[in-house]
Length: 362
Image (cartoon, rainbow, N blue to C red):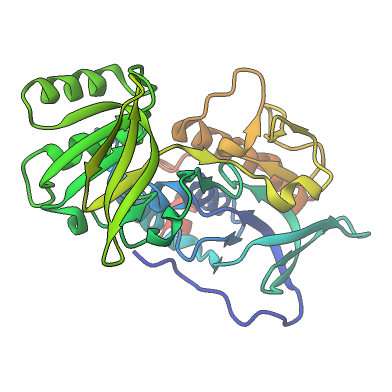
């Protein structure tokens, strides 16, 4: 689903806004919803060319099981549902743009500028940038980078492109195990063969996934090799095999059609580190009342923030977005008393959402 209200031309006069959200991942999108319930319209900026954040960029087809009242959905489905949910609030999206400047003005508002010179003057800022400017950790084998995007992949955008192919999957976390199991199972995306390579026999993945992988290896439906990549072979400009040094010191050549590498993300705060906000271990320090940073009027929600007891879960980010919206309301409406209303019973919220008020007397 495409985001509503794409932004206009960059470089014009600053856009005056009540709220600017930096990050269009699930938590950033839900922040639009919580602000909308308080009649605060948001502008959303993301460095990616589409909303969804890490869910879409790295795991669009990976199942998510811990969204309340949704037994299972993919990252793509979660993003589509959130976009539908925020439609009534008319958020404006500025995609494919990284925020490079954020500073407070004399009048208390914040000046925000993107790398494409889109500028804002906003009363509040919400940083929902996930782990920051994340980049997949790459495979350190000289020369192999020239196959990036053709036979070497750090994310799976279209599982169908690997159907029937001989795959080598590297990594020991959930992503590596999940995709290995995905490509082994029968279906339209089943690979010709799957070999999982990890530097040791221990994993950082869910125990059930590890058990399933070992079961499939016992059944000779896939292979697992302990080792590390030391080189590769090519023929006719194509990658044909990966050289793996095993725990026994022996180098083996593993043939392949495609190489999938899941070594995790390398989080980089990027320009956020220069905005004068309190930072602890590459995360923004916030309170647990409003999820406000060390700078009043700037809030941080989702994986980018830290506080005692913090859990990096999407559902935790949704809770943080709700409290951040209430914390921001006095900056937007300083003379207005903000009351908690319920979407089930509030005629005002029904009007905002564009739904009929139910008659509970019927």
